[in-house]
Image (cartoon, rainbow, N blue to C red; front, side, top):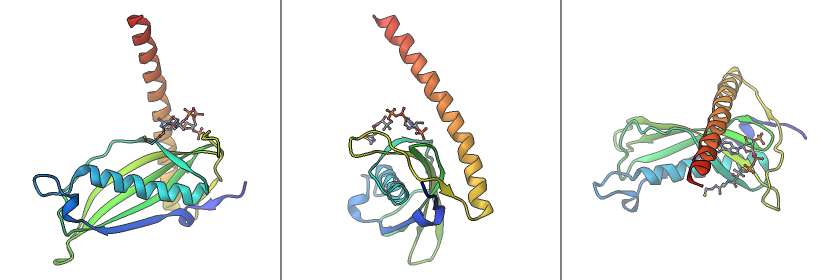
Length: 168
Ligand SMILES: CC(C)(COP(=O)(O)OP(=O)(O)OC[C@H]1O[C@@H](n2cnc3c(N)ncnc32)[C@H](O)[C@@H]1OP(=O)(O)O)[C@@H](O)C(=O)NCCC(=O)NCCS
């Protein structure tokens, strides 16, 4: 399978935050931002895999600043790593107050998507081709995170087995 460059699937989503995006305090709801992060990452993965994808997991997500109605939010998503059927995407979220021009880094997140075939089963994705040293560095860091995720999943499965055995 022929590889695809990171830049071929990198995705930028921009939108102005609207009143319907606000929580009862008047700030933009965290869940709205999470959905946009998932959307931006999903688009990048579909562009790479050229097939349907699902979100398998989202790593820790911290919000550094509140977002307000009227802010222009920009999400930049690019693939850091691909496995056999899985892809790790990094998403950086920034806002701009369009009246003042002040920009803020709101959040960054790593998500793992899995490509699915027509039967809904995981399917192989093309290799990822790195063109810059930064892309290579991000790939090395993503490989480290993948190792940690695999260990955490094994631990969680063991805990669940113990719990099931205890409850039965
Ligand atoms: C994600 C999903 C397709 C994985 O299916 P599975 O049968 O467990 O697949 P496998 O064990 O063969 O793993 C397939 C790949 O997914 C990766 N994977 C599975 N679960 C994962 C998780 N929780 N986090 C990160 N990667 C995961 C595996 O590492 C593997 O990667 P690789 O092919 O690159 O080596 C399946 O759990 C699923 O459909 N989940 C629901 C997804 C969904 O509906 N998301 C929307 C939110 S509701």
